[in-house]
Image 1 (cartoon, rainbow, N blue to C red):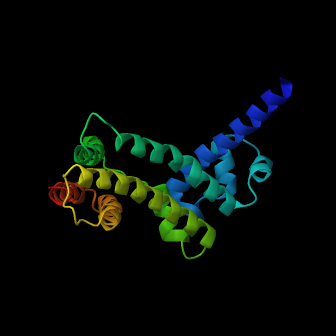
Image 2: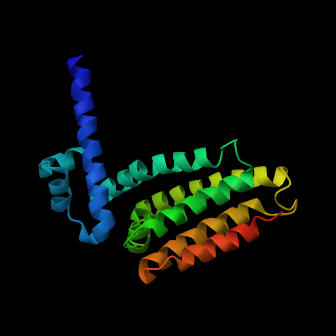
Length: 201
């Protein structure tokens, strides 16, 4: 019982460092976020960081997994919602995200995976591979839903669902980048208009 409690405490501390550190790294970028700033945000001594992570790069790899695993699960659940048709699931999911940004008084978008992509993909093959794997899993989830839409007659029989999933996923990332630099939801609105047209039967 005591051993189990100690194990849970260790996991809780690791999760705390990952959560708080990911927030710091999202705001400041990989290079702008030092280990000292990460442990201060988590309220733990610096030695705790190196107890759980071999390096800042190791931390970033694990943080990516912690941040995006639940997001990918939510994405998969939304695109498997049997109450809606496959096409409706996709459109509704992205429409909800666009509405989320539109409701903000001050448009802000800080993307953990986007920041690491720009800063570290070339400098760290390990981080680059992790980022690519997460983005590919997202595209794979979308592809499965597109294939269901195709089977239901909501997409043309000759549509390349893998290519379409890749295009939509990349277009969404690009729209989010424009959101960040332009402080306007116009790119997201354009994305939604084009997505709806792409998914017409």
